[in-house]
Length: 226
Image 1 (cartoon, rainbow, N blue to C red):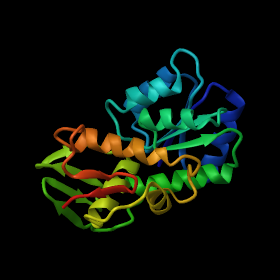
Image 2: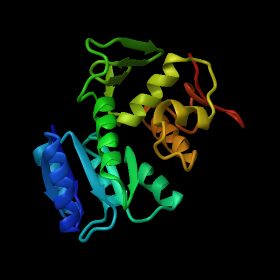
Image 3: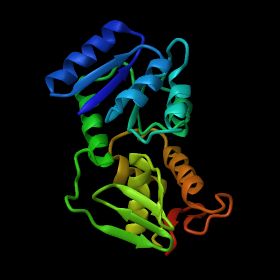
Image 4: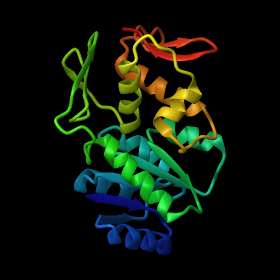
């Protein structure tokens, strides 16, 4: 499997590359947001690790532009720990977020989790189909369609809509969804769920402002209406 690491700190990148290569990954490296775009297009990595603060093009902008043509799992790295920065990263399309400095074992665990969720290491050999209304999810290929047309979802977006569709008409609080889908990742701000719900509505609902399927139970949580 191929991982792209983009950060303008050469020694940091060297350390990450060594650790990931030791685990059997092929590692590509870049130092700017423009490198991230070019290498993602040309090399089609299985996962991208992207720093926020970089020359020529910052990581947030690069992440947003990558999302215009790819659903590759993206882990954002930053020296900032503010919740607003994390939410901005998720809003740009990131799947996960790590604050420097971090333990390399934690990074490896996040990588493995995202690769499994993205289908690079399938959790459901053979797969099952989950259908409701105009939507169909294939757990094996991690493919989502609406009215027969493929909808490009990130790993986290797929996990979230799959979970809600498996439990139709059942309302889940933000905290319950964080426990079910994020575990110990990014537990500092439950608005992470809000960002992903909004992105799902933009991709799946005919009118995101007036959703018919991915609904809110005010002051309680979210649910999928079957």
